[in-house]
Amino acid sequence: MITTTNNAVNLPEIVVATLRTICGDRYVITDTDILYGYGKDETLDLHFPFDILVKPGTAEEIAGILQLCNEHRIPVTPRGGGSGVTGGALPVERGIVLSLERLNKIVGINTVDHCVTVESGVVTADLCAAVQEAGLCFPVPPSSAAYSFVGGNVAENAGSISSCKYGTTRQYVLNLQVVLPTGEIIWTGANVMKNSTGFNLTQLFTGSEGVLGIITQVVYRLIPAPKHQLSLLAGFEKLEDACAAIVAIKQSGILPAAVELICRNAMEVAAAFLAEPLPLVTDQINAHVLLNLEERSENRLMEAMEEAGAILEKYTGENILTATTTKEKEQLWKLRFNIGAALTSGAKKYRDIDIAVPLSVLYPYIRQVEAICAAHGVTVACFGHALDGNLHTMLQFNAQADAAEEKRVAQVVAEIYDFALANGGVISGEHGIGLLQRPFMSKQFPAAQLALMKDIKTLFDPNGILNPGKVVL
Ligand SMILES: Cc1cc2nc3c(=O)[nH]c(=O)nc-3n(C[C@H](O)[C@H](O)[C@H](O)COP(=O)(O)OP(=O)(O)OC[C@H]3O[C@@H](n4cnc5c(N)ncnc54)[C@H](O)[C@@H]3O)c2cc1C
Image 1: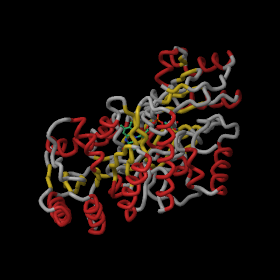
Image 2: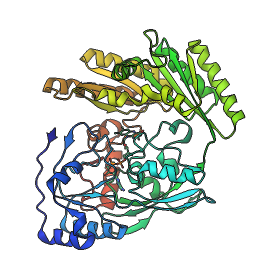
Image 3: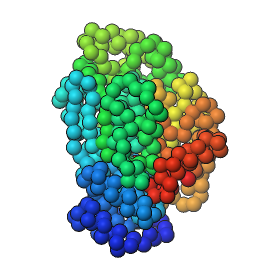
Image 4: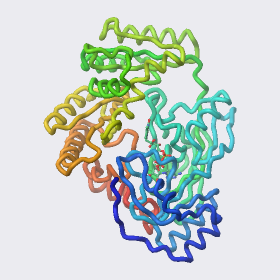
């Protein structure tokens, strides 16, 4: 476990007393056992100690906390479900961790306007279940939906396996209630489908990773629930054919609700971890492509299935399976959904590089990654949201890595970013910058753009109290 020692922020007694007045004694926590769990998220094995955990229950309480902390220059780190993998919720400068977990109400679902108003501490899966009950759908939950919060998803502009059809969180955010670091409470937009009024603050806060303000309510646009769904799994002898099939699917105009690629290296790790017979896992198969199709009518679904099936068949022959029942789908997706667990089993950990590249660069990207990793002796597993060009490139290394191994992995990360950026890609397709990827911002952005981002941060947060040390410095 990595524990950093930072300059302690000596919280004045008046601050602690005022926090208790604002939130109530129960919700101002100093018990170090409880604090420990809030000093980490899902990023490697990083842990940061801090001074006080607060669990406010309303936007007004958050406004009071931020005014107080702004006056006393105390760092505040907003925290949702703590499922982030780039260290965004880590309290790197101690101070206060502000958990949104008590803001957990679904305020209202509007079935005429097709939108939902939700507090930012609602668990993503709870939101999905509630809108589904109303016949509607929030189509882009991240795979961490069981524990991530709505506010965390907005703060990260989270992606989903279904982003290739429906877009990312960004495309669904209509309006946000935000508490600014100086304590004002604002709504950023309006609950309308079209809005050309002024600067788009809603989109500025979406993906702002908790450095510009604390999101307290979210208004999401919803879609009618798709009624008919099925999954297809195709196994390929050659990775090149799998990538060509994905390009052909894109060119066909079929819009699958998921197109996932699993390369041989990821397949092997997950198959060994599961240690059971799995569909289309054989010595001859070197890549899987998984498709979800969903449509409003059975006829359209069948049409899409035939078209997608014909394309896959052209590249792989008979190695195609179809699943229509929940049980069958679970079986087809089992390998994919166990890759993460497989990569952390035993004494291993991983660094997830979540670059996105243009689809035309996907195949050369994977080959380049293999070459870089082989040159440095680093084990890699590649899988993910192929149609988006957003591939999880997982570098596996020992939990107790020595300095030489850490150095090799760091070198591989830098070389992979260089290749992705030189070929029109970006550092992060969905996980954000946070703490972990911040050193690479200057690889992607020229000085003028970085300076603009820093100026925007200062405009919203003149004293730099909100989530310091993240995204931009
Ligand atoms: C197993 C697993 C699967 C995952 N799958 C996906 C996936 O499919 N797609 C994807 O995009 N990501 C995925 N992630 C990463 C992570 O789940 C997402 O980034 C998620 O959106 C984070 O939400 P959270 O509530 O846990 O946020 P946290 O980790 O608590 O915080 C993330 C960032 O948001 C800020 N923040 C949180 N709440 C607020 C708020 N209310 N106001 C302002 N700032 C706030 C924090 O300060 C921090 O910077 C996965 C992670 C794991 C461990």
